[in-house]
Image (cartoon, rainbow, N blue to C red):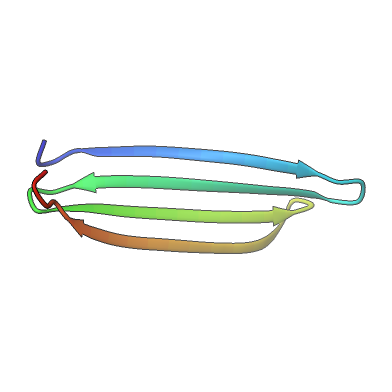
Length: 65
């Protein structure tokens, strides 16, 4: 379809003797008649404190799709 969207997420945790590291990634994919638009947000926490975060935003032409 020319206008559709999907949202997904993943959460992972690593437990070590002195720390707990967790990460969550949220992804949204939207389509228009000419492009796919992708947004990914990443959040990393160590011992439940913010450690790093990043956002990626890209658009891709719908070549033959």
